[in-house]
Image (cartoon, rainbow, N blue to C red; front, side, top):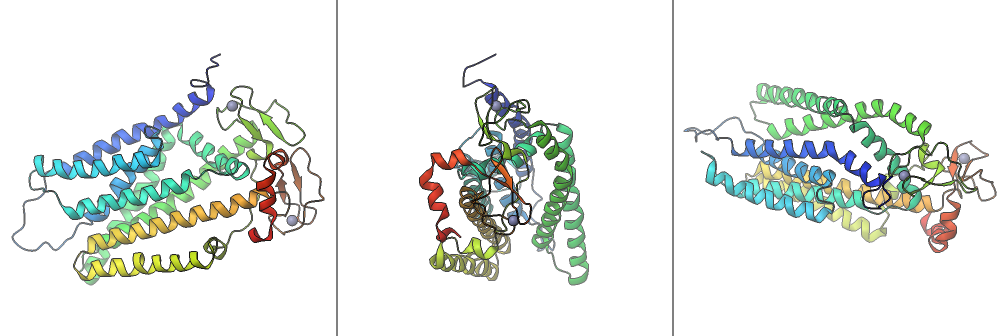
Length: 387
Ligand SMILES: [Zn+2]
Ligand SMILES: [Zn+2]
């Protein structure tokens, strides 16, 4: 067995799970280059009546490129992926003016592409935020399941079909209906509703298909770093295992769906106090109302859509990281209060790091050793300011 830490089993697993992303990235990049350099139609004598939502497509194409690059592991830091994304936007526009007939570099296309990169950066920083041990292993359960699911090429194809068919049907349908009813070219709206349909379909499909993968994780108890089963190992008295293949620590609650407390939107928005809410309101006013409106009335409807997508995307990324922050601090005090009914659990004994609430029978995990190690953090989490 190879014992070097650089090419150990955890490294080999990482290399395996990024393979599908690398294949997707290469195909996707080629598609972007081909479609953006395809000869454009010659300028029409009359004003065109159908407007293609090309600014929004630039936004999505380059934002998607950066996210794929980051997932592929070829660029491990979010800022490097963003810089490569910005360079790609610039070079792509420049070579269009050189090589493609009836196409020229457009400042608006470039701006839309940059906004896509910016939105992707927001999401990469939100997703890359280091997580506390308990919360980290819980979200790693879902990402481990997703990686296992995508290791089969047929599942990637299924996911692509589920994502693209509703997108095409809804977008074309909305466009044709709007054209016939209002005689207006509503490409931006049609594409937005198509994307929403696509997201809903993917969510439904993944929820359904991941159930068996999550059950298999509960049964097989894999190490989330190298994938080796830890089923035959017994944990210590606090529920901790150490992987014999790669040395990664695992708590025995990480394979099970531990109940999380409900984090309301109000709790998420008050994470930074009154000044945070004031900043959020200002952001919503500028980014979601004033910015798009100002561009719309000045005739830049394409860019108005891209700005709206950017503001919404960054807002969602912010809310996501605030929610992770809330759940992270809650996880530090897990095993102290019941997630379901709020019952005080301090007197309840846990069997090897896990137990049940006497009031409502909800499972809880207690990262005893973790809390002893990080006494300071654990004590902070108990103060009422985090309640
Ligand atoms: Zn391992
Ligand atoms: Zn309870």
